[in-house]
Amino acid sequence: MKCDILITDILLLPEPGTGVPEADSFIAIAAGRIQATGPMRELAKAGARARTTIDGCGMLAMPGLVNGHCHAAMTLFRGLADDLDLATWLNEHIFPAEARHVSPEMVYRCSLLAAAEMLLSGTTCVADGYFFETEAARAFADAGMRAIAAQGIVDFPAPGVPDPAGNLEAAAAFLDAWSGRDPRILPALFAHAPYTCSATTLRRAKALASERGVPLFIHVAETANEAAMIAEPLADSPIRHLDALGILDEATVLVHCVWTDDQDLDILARRGARVVSCPRSNLKLASGIADLTAMGRRAIPVALGTDGAASNNGLDLFGEMDTCAKIQKIRAMDPVAMPAREVLAMATHGHGLPGLPGGLGRLAPGCPADLVLVDIEQPHLQPFHGPDLLVYAATGGDVRTVIVDGRIVVRDRRLLTMDLEAVMAGVRAMRVRDDTATGPAGTNNA
Image (spheres, rainbow, N blue to C red):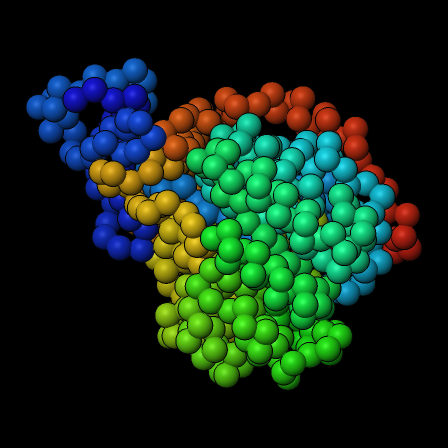
């Protein structure tokens, strides 16, 4: 058996959420996919020969994490405007900062920094949405990540689209530029929210997404007063407004969905729409806690996201998993609500994200070789009784090696696809000051 990469003596977690880890295992990778797995005793029989061999002793192999929602370029605004409510943070701090500082170079450099942060903490795939998204897509490609990159759409002057009348034309140009360009990068559309996009814009955005066969992402039902912010509502809730517009289907991804009722959730289940929950961002902005257990009862696909670094303020999905599991227990006042295994599956399978390759989230023959090696011989992970510790005790700092599409991008916590010091220096040189701040700072394109 010839392969590109051979991982030996590893504790293998082939599919988070089901089964148990398999000790003393090997993983063979060839042509970007898992070629074979099994116990070490069978490796000699297979006569394996590899160009690169990794000793996995003391580590656990698991599928890479999938960040279902991010604004990568907003690493520039991390910590700029903390401790504010969403409306104040967004309208008085973030939007003005974006108007002054967002440029193609900023998006590329700051998205590259976000990619570094995500890869080093075990995220191999991200769904991103922002302006000048062609530069974000280029950053993810250069970093070696898998990504759904969505061009932002709003009904007011935005970076790269000074005349909002051209917002859909700019989005179409982005899809043209990245369609088929890189097999790891899927272009998509991101309509910011029902209160920043008119009914006409939302219908046109969905029509364009459907025509091109790409997902449409949108922030919705994030805050309690969102319905009152919609200029010409077609229904009495943001979800029902989108349903009245006819844009909800299995290729529509709804980010946040904090303020939903039974009728809203029944609509999502009936339409097949998908959800991304961003618990830490929702907590920081005091937006609320999404009812993921009610979504689970309706089999609504839910992915886990970090949101942008301006409202989180980090992009570590291990921390996001821990927070997600615990706040769902508090919401339900039930310690068995949202078990760790369900959250781990949510963070690795990319539930809720259309267009990802089949088999993502599993380490089995034929599946994409997107995986991470976690050092479990750390004091806070010993004794390692099982995968629940990955949710309740592990951090992104425990990740040692990261492989995306069969390519090693992090080895022994060293990024192989970029000069990290140069990337950080470039972003530091762009450091901005929040001229609107009069008190504590805070921000996020939530």
